[in-house]
Amino acid sequence: MFHLPGLRMKAPVSESGFSLVETILTIVIISIALVALISAWGQSAKHSGDPFWHAKAAYLGEAYIEEIITKRFDENTPVGGYPACTIASCSSTLGVDKLSDGVTDETRDLFDDVDDYHGLSETPSLNTLGAIRPEYDRYQVNVSVTYAGGEVPLTGGGTRPEKTVKRINITITPPGESSQLFVVYRGNY
Image 1 (cartoon, rainbow, N blue to C red):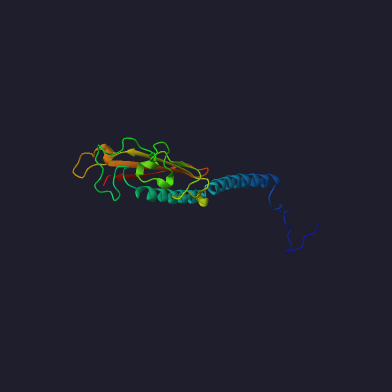
Image 2 (cartoon, rainbow, N blue to C red; image 1 turned 90 degrees about the vertical axis):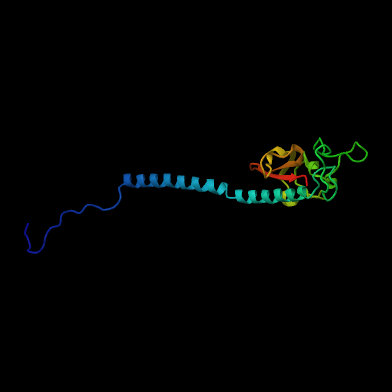
């Protein structure tokens, strides 16, 4: 073999690139990362509508609160609220009153005081006139009313007599969601 000056023999160059093992490991690692990413995205997408349901439940709860607190405190409270019924004259039972025949229960369009709403349970939700609210057709509404004077403190300390305040609990259950409780107090004034 002869040798030319300035011409060198190059050593064999190794092939550059990925081996089969490196390629398989890369695919496995990327697959694991994608599964984790898609799982996290799926969970967040699953609950992305929750604020919408909660906002609708809040609007519905507010509608019931506004309807109920505009009613008289008690069956024995005169229209206008003055003079307030005395502790002795306030109704001892809460719930729907009987009509003048003494047998038939009042219907919702005749509810005239706060405690008439005690035990109200509606699916679908109805407005004051008894018409279905189509935008809330799968919502469950439950109302309970209790005397709660002991829960509301007096300004100077102590507590109020029991029959001077009513606690109104409105539970709204959106379709497929957990219940939301709205509480309002109505005083005897």
